[in-house]
Image 1: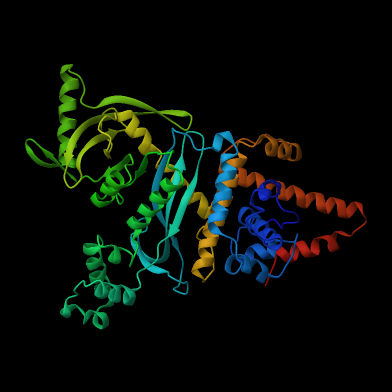
Image 2: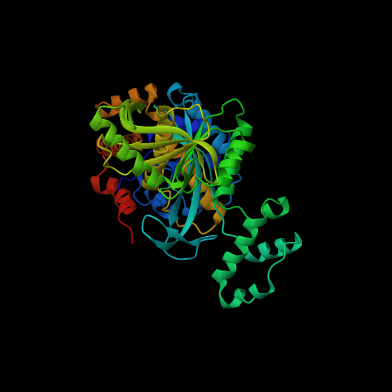
Length: 470
């Protein structure tokens, strides 16, 4: 745990990009919070404030940045993306891909505004969490969040009143569930809402993850009409209604992910993808054994400076509930012994390498969530929902600064001059480099104090107090 005796050079270097978003005082708190997210092991307001020996202030000042400061989240994101656009390597490119996904920000306890008891697929259990939906950008050089939104649980009283006001009839027999079985009442109301959400007055009563995803994409396209990048997503988002929205309403190209149980409508009848892939695998092995052309053809794609190899089947099929789509089945292993990955694309002229490349760029959003959590994405102790949204936005700033720093020659040269070693690496590496530079600043402070005749105990007292607390 390194006491912050000066703002890290990375923070000072990029802070001017955000000066017009904050007041003079709020900009200092912004720099303190960003520095703490980069350096502190404890990413809470208390933990960050305690380590800030430089610009030492009461914790309430840092709290106000998140709860009361009038800065605009939209303005913050605009400046963050402008910073990324200022460096050629992190600019959005025509070869880029957008991806959609969500993650749980888990917490112990229910004392957070709009927290919900949600199913954690990784842990296979329910947990208290906020759910963050993100739209992410990726190309072969970089990746970063474009936009994001926290899901909010439905207000059941408002939902009930709104459905009734929209003349949607609720079954009289279901009202008893409100007291007897609240969770069943919740599921019933959401089911009614889902069946009638085509009505505008019903749709506005609640936004699920799919509606948030639709909003994020529609808003992005409204702001960037000339940059129509393809979007990719996992099986949960590959739902007929969402795919029809992307194709029909947004005219957006996409690559989704099908499940083994999804069905193809073939001339021979309906067949699950799992059975279809098994049949193709047998045909492939028969062809290879008899010297005929393989069913699964070898392909390679560029990804993050490397080439990746797959064995791929690609054809246009009628997919049940989705309509006519390009279907790709991929294996990593030449003998097809690994589980197949089923892909769905709405551009019928696309081929397997292009579809596979786009789907491959879904992975960076997973990395962002992992790295974001290392930077404190889910470590807040904030009760207020608006403050949590600001915390999420500031995490996106931190990740974007690290991405920009990878290609910023001026910053790299300055830090290399201080640290005396080559700086070249990923976003996590640049976070560690920032921590190393803060350690260097601490060493310089101690050296300067000793040179000026200060005693070591007097120099160390505030530093030790920042690290060792009651």
